[in-house]
Length: 476
Image 1 (tube, rainbow, N blue to C red):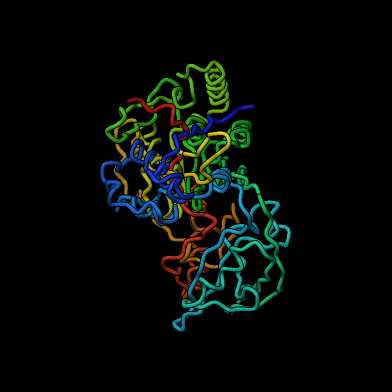
Image 2: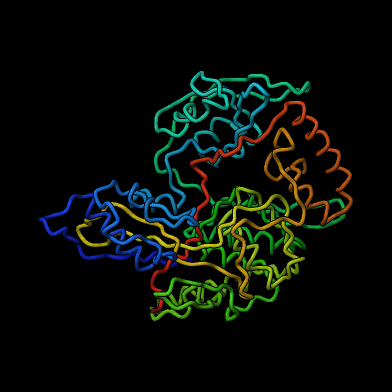
């Protein structure tokens, strides 16, 4: 069994304000500031203590010390933060997008996916389904935020399902009740399959939704399937993947690239001035340079698995959109020095632009005195050639916006325009079929006047920084 690197945390001495025991907020905020002045990438821009209000609530206090360029650091109750990073949540198991469908401002939900084994999945909700009401309330551009409160809560709620008919009209189907599950564990892999094209190509297709460090065996099993099928090409679908752990991202990259060598540099870390920048090999990232024999043994096990299942591909097709961030972007950027820019073929949209890394900091004293945890940006990331300058995202070679094509086809379907584009490049005989499908779906989207609701972000699938996971790597 492969085990991910442990997230290391820091314990700090308790502070006192000089007038007896500090309040809980003050104690938390002093703990936060001590950590942030040490490791935060923009630590020198944090205001001096005399200009800070340590009596604010921790969330308000944390927001006030963040640098204007920092879009991604956050604070959360420690237990919720660690659940979040592990893919554990209270949810009905849907990924959703919002569409405005007319000039009047009416809004509908379009289902991106239903997590396997979730209440939504068990109720028969599928990708491409439409939801027009929640608890009997229709959505508009002005009220959708309040209507979605029930969706993001922990109590049962009802949804009105609908579909698009042959006349391009939205027609209601059934109403169902959904009850969120506490501590539901998401699976990183939504689909892994081999597609046989008319031209005789065997294409591995992996729909990967989160880079979860504690699910390496599932990833290895998928590549074992591809290796056994002798696939000639790989389509890696990261269209909704908001990121996650660098450890599992490196495993994925090693499984894909040609001529994998564990001692080759994989990533560059650029820290604040308190710490020394470094270039890290695959082996070092897996723990091979650790003084802990167990970590070294784990690294050796990872390397053995990668070499056994490596697809040795000269190129890879990666579907990524404006929902793809963090570790998703890292895989694209860090594979390019190994395969060349031209052979890491990005299909979709410009990505989020998360070229930064973080790690989790919690209070590990016993008994624990601070109930909060922080996930600060601590490092700028670059590939082995030193390129990491993509704060505005990575641009695709082939730009396709799935919101222009309705209804959304099932995951892995040849009717999906993003997958169809990749397969059409791999096997040109599929291009006429893809063009016909895309034309039909584009006409439906235009007739519905459907446009993506600007500014909406699904709270259950928010982009997160690359989790570098090991504070112990930092060198003064």
